[in-house]
Amino acid sequence: MFKINIITQLLIFFVLAISINLMTINALSILFIGVAIALAITQNNNFLRVIFRFKWFFLVMLLIFSFNTPGEHVLFWPFAISPSYEGIWAGLTQILRLMLMLAALNLILACNTRQELISGFYFIFSPLKYCGLKIERFVARLWLTLHYVELQNEANSKQDLMSQLKNMATCKPEQIDQEENVTLKIPQFSYLDFLVIVLLFLGLYVTKALF
Image 1: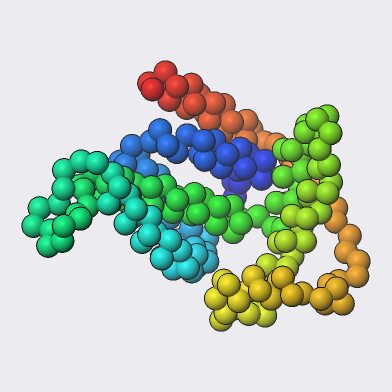
Image 2 (image 1 turned 90 degrees about the horizontal axis):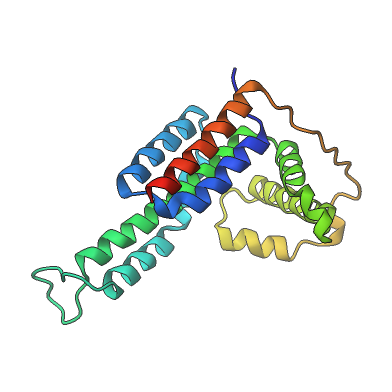
């Protein structure tokens, strides 16, 4: 089975987060369908739960864009303050962008273990050590965060997000494992990784030339 390593996956995610605002609605839709198919192949149902938890946030975002973006007002609107077609389109586009980022993040989490995620983040941000940043401290906090979220998801799978966050905030020291060894392994690069990275930067160059 062909699989790109975690560093390549994170690079793709970071580039996607930067370039997503340059994509048209058609490109976003095609990319979202591709990521959704990948999630279905990995049998990851967590994405649907995340989208359900964000439903009110998406609704508020759509209302804000709809009523605050200038343009042609919706016909036959019964109230004095009406939304615009441009605002509705902009709101739906922003929601699609957020859903795409959430889907990509869930795909990375589904295809990698916690150990692989920590190793990937460590080796990507390791050059920042020369700027005086404590990468080891960041990695340790990320490890603990993922560890607590995993424990809370197992123990409180039927609770909502706010309840889980409250339980994490009130977690007592005696409930935490006293010692756990964390081993960072350098992800191995294959020819597929180098090919994906080259195509990634080539795509960035083409996008910059077009826009």
